[in-house]
Length: 242
Image 1 (cartoon, rainbow, N blue to C red):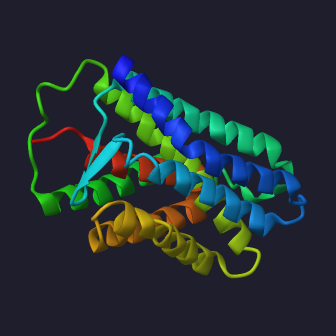
Image 2: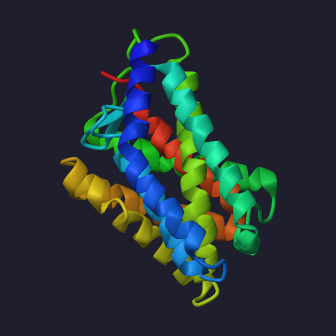
């Protein structure tokens, strides 16, 4: 537990200079500069995500993700992401129309969101070979992992499929906006794939497929369904396996 809190402290200190710079930019920017504000929020997310690698919060093996072995730390990061969503939505009141939370049937959206995430996640781990669950992960690890992947990916979906895709729909058709949000999502993983880790093309291909799928799920069913797709896919590739 103490080791996890030490890593969290190191992680926050590492991010602090960049985070302060981004927040100052947001404070100085006018509310009407919606496109730039969205870009800055996405940049903040990329900073927070990519800073996880050097401090040891996660590591990659092909398309598999291994998170730091602390349920409390994982849950803290997931809850922090949800609080980030609450704060951004509260601050950016002028951008509320861009957030399409739900469209159509809630049950159908949940089924499609979960099903799409299962297909993507199972497809990814099948490339590495299916393995049984490790028997020795600590109590509560799966719960902490669930809170992290769904909380963290809710934040990511609000940014990419909420603000970005919603903004793109004011310029292009919904189909093109879905494609663009997915491709931009993949492009924003370039640093993670090429400079922060050695994941390379597999990570970029996975995120392109995942991003485009989430874009179309959001187009039809809204952000909540897309968050289910994203979270489920990441949960599967993050499960502790041999």
